[in-house]
Length: 345
Image 1 (cartoon, rainbow, N blue to C red):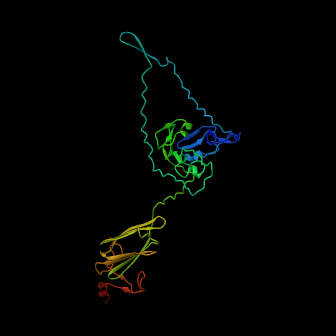
Image 2 (image 1 turned 90 degrees about the vertical axis):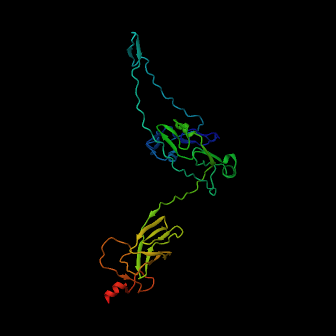
């Protein structure tokens, strides 16, 4: 089948059914300005777009019959200047007259343009479980192969299963057109569409759906604690913690939490402890709704706070123990350390 060469069409067509309403195309030229892409013939109807794939999907604005004739390329007009324009006469030492075109123009150097940073290319894969309608074009850039059948285009190692394409995005800079993945650059848009792919692979007629990774989000969790004369119990209320990735690190005077939660959430906190502890005698355990930590004190003095502070708290050293029901945060009965017990008595 012949291939239509009209801009915006590019389909294979049957000569027997080709009529004046078969082709929808753009009679104008593409317009690329400051990243925006549009067609000169319908820019007032179809808004400019940023993405090149979206630009290629802009529907044509004119109806006609298909053609395989090569599009006419306008020849730029070249302005010639008069031979005698701007001549300046100079007199040599021997009296002969010498003519020149004047002082040469000094062209200031163009500022250097840094090449675009090439982002990592994540290529699509063909989902072989999805049925494809015959005539569907390969989704890879510059391929243009129409689907015939699974046996011809998707299964095995036949010649028609091989896709020649551009893996990276197109680039348009100061009238030059090409692809980031290869060096060739052209000026005309029609020539750009003919740039042969620089990589070979498999066709993609039905791209697999990719799950975009969620950005990690730091969150806060409620932290409660209570103490006995020998231990400090800490509860971090974090639901469904990933036990494989999360860590709890206990040191002599501080504890580090790095907990991974559902929905790409993460809780990270370091607590500088009010008093010294024995890391070897301390422990922690993951539950479905929280993380429990038991810190073994190095002495039996009461902790006024969980975290060490530089503020003057005065002569306060009360211990809230577990005189109530086992497993509660805090207790019903007040437990005093040895120093405060002597004061009360």
